[in-house]
Image 1 (spheres, rainbow, N blue to C red):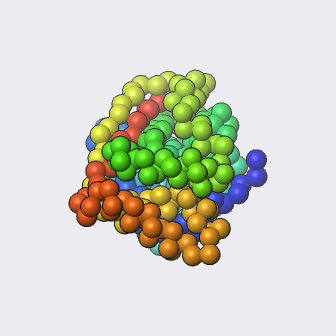
Image 2: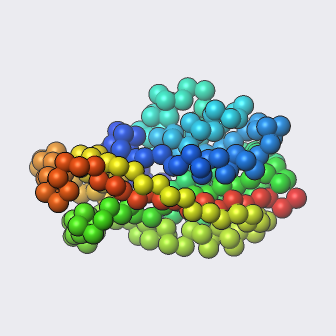
Length: 254
């Protein structure tokens, strides 16, 4: 399937409102990689660079693979030392056996998973690491969730790409990848207190929420209304939002 940018119009919201993954998840990944093996890392589907940022602090070279021009521009602003490849993970080229760590965060469902996982196996050095992690749609309590569910089943539904349903099978795809042996699976608690404005901003950062809003004569009024609906339920107290991810670590078979 040819690449079609779905976040270009939401790159600012994506960069501002998407929370990072918990530090414990990164600690678990880096604990598996000795200092002597931290030469090159690749971040596939890098978005605006939050994961690449962590890699850049620990590896001599980091390659962020992100085909969306607006998202890649955010990486360039944030991480001038990171090499950016504006290409899909399927079409990216990299010498075999040249990478110590590959990360795919909240992105495998957008990709041709068998093809990308085969690329990862080819690019990794023997015994090097693949880290795939993802999180389901956030949960914020029954009353708040009822509001977002009504949008998901209503105006956002026709704008949701069918590939988003793959977020239910990504773990099976990683487990089944030839030449990669799963060494660990773990889930991490990540409850983020968010204001109503920030939680509305998260949904604004989604491909489907932003696409729907662009069909309206006044998108800003729509997001303000969603924020007001959250406030009507939660008041002005912080909303505890569950962004808890799951991590699968695999090693390339020697």
